[in-house]
Image 1 (cartoon, helix red, strand yellow):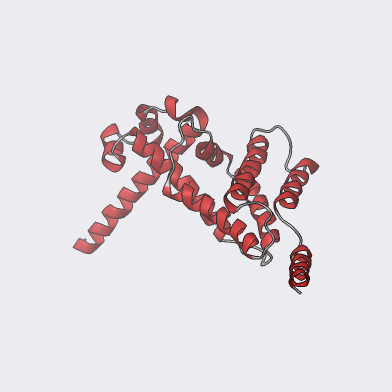
Image 2: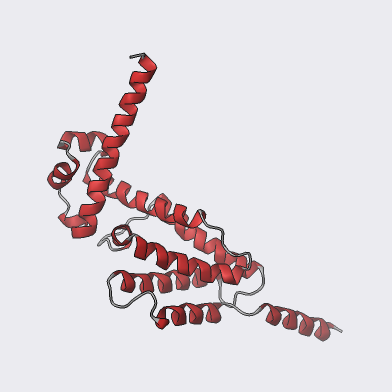
Length: 209
């Protein structure tokens, strides 16, 4: 086997091993949480030895952080694969729906991302939150945000996370009218119609004449 092909084969094997370890860790973390995760269980599920895990990830904490990072990266990528509406307020409602949709489609990942006893920020997690902030900022740039950007962003995240967590836990169904009611109430509270901005601008012009 040529040297280049041998190196590629080893790289693919190494990546497959890393993926098997991460998949095992994600499943066990979602089932029992970080405190109950044991390297022995990960080894048994992934078919590797403990030194292999330490070689690829360093220690248990690093393994957990990487598993959570991967989940956030997939979550963020899932949103980027679909085009949001051009209207900024519609895009905000769209983002709410996609958030709920992802949580229900990936309940194991969702629990791992948000139900840690001692959450630690990850680069992908911060990037996902920043994506929501940019959507809110677009509403502000259009003159249609009624609340400061950071407060509105936190309110949107709190609301969509709360709804999604209850749905993932099975308290009620996605089709429950309360989901749309909560989403629409949030949007109505933090935004205003485009016409309101135009009326306000006309009033300001008249006050100057």
